[in-house]
Length: 430
Image (tube, rainbow, N blue to C red):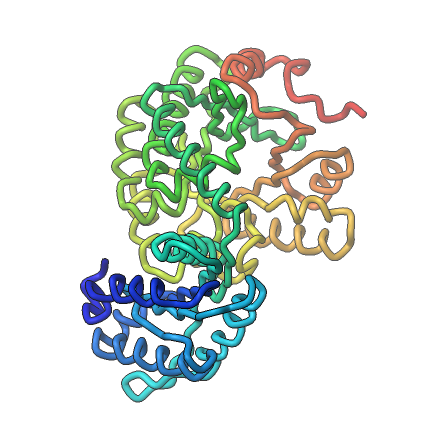
């Protein structure tokens, strides 16, 4: 628990449990947690942060029913215990009423400050510890969904939590045993069909469950702190593979390797050391490695990404803005970011046949080219995509029409015969 707001700390949970045990069943429990409360403490200090919690508790007391108890829940959370609450929908309705508590601004250090809060809701009868655990699980899911979220605990949430715990345990074991694979999707010159680069992609085949989607295990890795180990494994494997291709295959001398980087790796601070270790172990030149960072991480409100990305660029590696268009989608900041290229999100490519979408793609490609940025189109899946992108001046693409993610030996075969026209990616077939 944070050292801040200690008066809400040690006695809070026992007192809350006592109140729950004394409540008339069925009981509703709301756990309310101010979003980005750490920023409030940093900006205004601990006394102001405590005053904000007091003010929120007072507003919650006014918003809920007479007789409902508003209590500290430990750390920065506030609980509302509602005796004799009819059903889950009544608990949700109460959560909506409670949301009125942070609609108006609070005054901190003479300034008006607006905040939002996430709320976890549990309802039922029985063990007080279990009810509180359910509310806490619902609060965790509400935070995951974004600021101001409300989540009601149900059996599906519990089943999902148990599934994530199992995935995390199995993933930890797979990392320890070396059971995770890396495959590679070619990045292709849209005019010639030549493979210019490859993107390394983690793949996991579970012994009993079969293939586990990256959309399942990567978020679990991020949430459990395993993303650092997973990222190091992919980075080291990919760099060594590219070094082997470059050493063995005449057509691979200029091919680069793209590796995805999680915002959690950037925030953790270990990424520059991991990159240096991978380059040293593989004896690759730094410019052979492109680190792909999602747009939202590059424009994080915190200052964490800036110094880390600047240090990575000082090593000589390339920085690529991934999924461009899913976040702020502003062309004006491209010149300010420490990047060498960007990847157009597939949502742009899917609509490239529409004049408006085509105009956006053309503007992005034109401005990026003038800034010296390399543009890659993701999700090139159809003949129309290919022809439209060529016409709009986009020179690089990636997608199932060009090549699916491939094992290392299949990519090696492409690179081995790179000088033979028949071995290039066939772009002109119907």
